[in-house]
Amino acid sequence: MWQQPLPPEAEPASQSVTQLMFFATHTLGEVDVRLYRHYARQLSQSRGPAMSTQMWVLLYQENMEDVRILSGESASIGAGVCAWGYGAIRRAFPALASSASAASRVYLGNSSEERNFKRYWWVHASLLLWNQTFGYGFPLLEYYWRIEPDVVYTKSWADLVAYAAADKSDLVLPKYVSQEDSPSYVHWRAHELLLSTLPQRERVFSLVSLGRYSRLFLRLMAESWAAGVSGYEEITLPARCLPRNRCKRTSFTALAHRRLANSTSHLSTSFFRYNPCWKCDSFLRAAVAYNSRQQLWHPVKSRECWADYLDATSSGTQEVALGPAKATHSHMAEARKEWSESCRDA
Image (cartoon, rainbow, N blue to C red):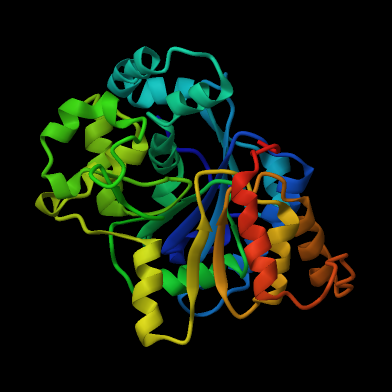
């Protein structure tokens, strides 16, 4: 019922792919296309642990009733572009769609933020929609990455895949924060029943704009979604990955700390926050000045300077206006001051 042919951009290597990196977005503008083209090339040209990783774009289109490949966009980017809509969620997971109406009772407003909150009761089910439609072509698949466009990385995405390769956790999210440490987190109140079933140490949340998920974890989530179990995904994703389910979870922050002790490679999640937004040129200066370090930044809403830089470096010109070539610790302190600014580019 669901299966469709793979796009030409995905088909040749699908039989050997072990990891998929999905960039999940609801817009596909000119800057996005340029960036995704570079990201796809980074992965397709990678060696080592990331050699068998393939990139896709998951494009949410609100009024779409099914799942389909956008051929023109796929050809332009050099990776499969899979469009999907809420109608496909209703078809695949009717109980989830029904129970997710609880979100409307929690978020009564119609602001862009509250509309966004409502989507995070079911948006990760798009990974299962993709799997039902195209997963048959990837027999060796082990991990699914889902990354939102305002997450940017100072090195090749293949480097992040390689960095995390030694860890076999089923769920990897940015950082887990406990209810005890953050009692004012706005979404706790909608999950009192769920939280009452969990030990205190398991009552955590994490941002979900970046994640790596195993086949086991997605199978556990599929069971929950099919049964109509829903909730805000920053809470429900960690809550489903418990030792009693034989599910192991860790965070990118934990991986960074762990590697500091036994590796010359260094990952920093210090610039990964909910808000406020980072300016593109602050990220770019860090990427150029600290090119031996791997830094995850979020949220960077305006990314044109990064696309310009990748265009220039890939063509060999590298003449991008960066200001002073040498960044200092004072620059990084200046960048951190942006946390006090509002997110103007949302």
